[in-house]
Image (tube, rainbow, N blue to C red; front, side, top):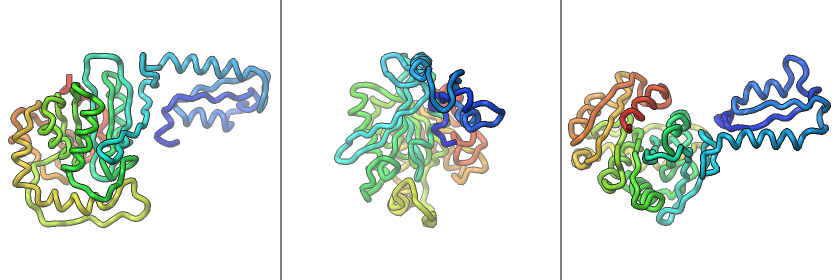
Length: 303
């Protein structure tokens, strides 16, 4: 099944429908981890007891509701926010009512908020989590004009509107990490801690633009065409940006198999006023390849 298979749900079937070792009802129940299977003894494809079964199922699901929020724990909800003339698609996971600040996740080039599903759900056990589609990605507006600064401006505006006077912890992967760095320097009173996943100190490099993949993309390819040259030539100002980050920062590197030169990541940490580095040998996609270890490292740092 799809990534939505963990969403709670009910399969209500008559005894006739689910008899035998390998019926469609049983197969669907096994493939749907979030489901419950209710059998109505005296019914086939229809019959009595349906209303009672639905009420009992909803009562069970209500036990997992996050108090005061009406959102199922661990189940994401998607919302659209207006920000400065465009919209941002934001996916949220409600956490418990606690003193822990919300956690905001920013994805890499070409990735959408759903890329964080594998780590956001377990992280929401201790705090509320949000994953933001950067402009030109997923459910956010695709305006055709892109830069790291514009993306940072979008997210900063959303933070100011959504968390007025509050603080968040910020995690960024690759391009999302560059965006997060600019936000941390622009909004130092609103970002409590920063986590950068496989982000190095940018240095001049020969242009090597990737070829556009075939098929329908979940993002605007103009993001690559406009932001990639900016990254290739962003080095002189980038060291100053990193040096201006005042908040405690954890940099997670993907190790030897990452395409990001490890010496550039170490150089970025050297420029941070309060930075530390850990290595998880996973390549560039650390949170996707090693979600449990990534989650443990991030939550330990944030705590």
